[in-house]
Picture (cartoon, rainbow, N blue to C red):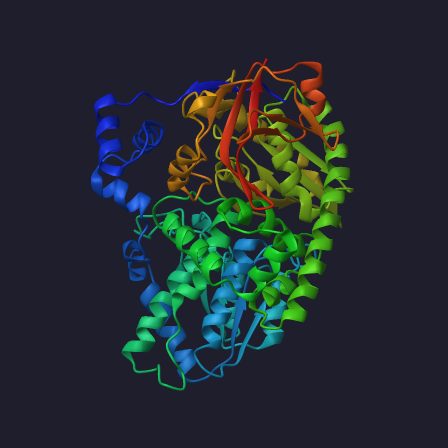
Length: 561
């Protein structure tokens, strides 16, 4: 793995730190973190520490939201057939479940959904998924988490008399923009100030606007009560965290309140997952590392429909059965991932001299390409595209480093690609094998132009600690900064390695028991530390509860010899 360069965050004014400590009854570390992350005024700090649903923006600030609501309300009033077209990742699954759940509460509507199979149909509104939609004969198709590049397919549906509402959050390409109603904060003409909302977040905005419009028209009655949208926030939180959206602004509000809902009044599916994974308190980490991989596994190896049914299930036996199936699929995914990673590492050895890795093999499984790309970015610190070879076509997923905008790099090669789309850090594409060599050359040329010659991964620290500072109160004060994730990283501190021998856990992991209340854990570090014990550790702090006893646990993220 590349050696990370450790650096301390920028210095802050000590007087401001003292003032914040007094005002917010906190410690200097928390005050410094708030200031470094741009929260300086009383109002900014208040809205960060106490995220309020009142600070969610008006959904009508999104371009064409009024048109979307009017069309959807008219379709509901006439009880015409509606089909939701989702996506097979967790953001798409939660967005599909969220809209279905709300529309079911609007009355006895003619509703259905379709999530394309990753291998059979590809991502989103493709030619083959359009054919299936035509067979389903809806009056209205609502896309969630997809559709922004489906100009041709939207036109086909419209030509067949099917109306469309595209809701998406992916970056738009001017030449592929669909006509008609498009609700997407990243549409070139959309003035919505917060662009980093998830696909499920956009779906939530749609039902927020629709609920109010239905209220204004007198739709809700004693027999058909107005739904409480707080019950949908768990899905929005799950979609936001799983899609690695920055946990700032509206995403922080949705995730904070979604986690409250999950911990106070969880839906059946969440209760079942908690039991299956032996989780007491659900945090953003639980969503990202335990729940999301399990839900994602369905769309990676099979059909994602089951994950939607699972999230909406009200039958305990059925939900438990589906959870076990999802868990088994996730275990299978992990095994396939290990095999693919081995093949990919061998291929990567042949491309070491290039500024990026573009690896293709008939052995690569489309559903696992993105995960393997992530592993290789971590290992080589360069952009990676993993392409599956199937039926004379290459389809794949890419992951990038902060120095390269992946979607822009693919846009430069658009004439060589059949389809592409995504974000700065993650994207997908398909092409014919005959274009691969030229695609590689052009992609590498773009990388050489935009990535500095000497780069190394950086690790930003929030300060250094010593063991006497590690009290329960200290960790509790850090926890006020939750939920952690993209855009609001878990605080990271350097600490000297204790002058004690470590013990092994399952021959793979290491543990230092510093005292009765503090332990240090290094996952999968036994082999490395046996050769060269570290002198300094970079750690996150948290609590570990076991058999009713709470200890402070330091989790090693990096180390230096």
